[in-house]
Length: 310
Ligand code: CP
Ligand code: NVA
View 1 (tube, helix red, strand yellow):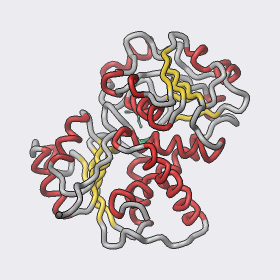
View 2 (cartoon, rainbow, N blue to C red):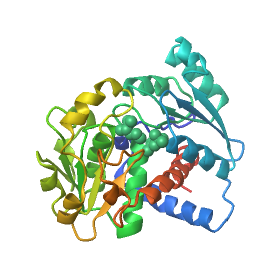
View 3 (cartoon, rainbow, N blue to C red):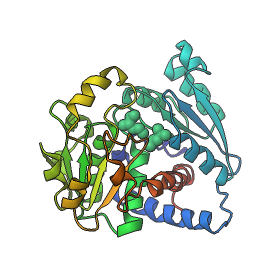
């Protein structure tokens, strides 16, 4: 008896495959309503708290606009303008914030900090990016792939660049949604397979590493990358620029990919570093749809966490 346990979305592996099928379908419906100006207000009187300990453009705008569109409201907090910046324990912050709001999105550093918040929260907590994972972004990326090319199951995704929060999340997604993930990183910047988990339970998906980015891209259906230096690693910027010089997604890499291959980047991008301008601004790039789709998938996610399947 009693209320069902609160569900959180702290990493991609928190949901089952069939839940992703539901969410992706639901996001398509929610996007259609948005595009046809049909009102969709399932979260009237609900409040989303957004906590940012790192900078953001897309995550803030997509969650904030999305929550208003669902009929709810938003509270925005940063480290600088809250007691989080004055060393109030994350556990205490979670207890307080989750008594006054209905759902929380956090962007922070260590995954353990997000987990500590969730463990003390009465309401669902969503990962808006940690050092280890960025699940909302990969959900949007997969939605975008499906929109353009149909099911991602059985397809090949090439990750070129840093073995970071995005790469870790792609690895979890490959296992759950059954696609083939190829990862090429410079030596020393590999995906942490222990963090990302489960090469032993890849299901119908697969995971392979490549020392040369060109080899990872050969025949790929989707080529994707991210900044060389993620937030929180700025002190390594110069060392990384040298180490990653050969991991710039260029026209040659796109030329060896499948003829209808797409290019994605979660943004913000640095043209001339991790990607050539001709690729990100070229015909195979779907980065603007990818950014917009953050809002649609997150609306589906918030609705699901608060109301379940509708
Ligand atoms: N892709 C992404 O999360 O962008 P922001 O850092 O602007 O939120
Ligand atoms: N890997 C990047 C993603 C930014 C959206 C970072 O963590 O800074």
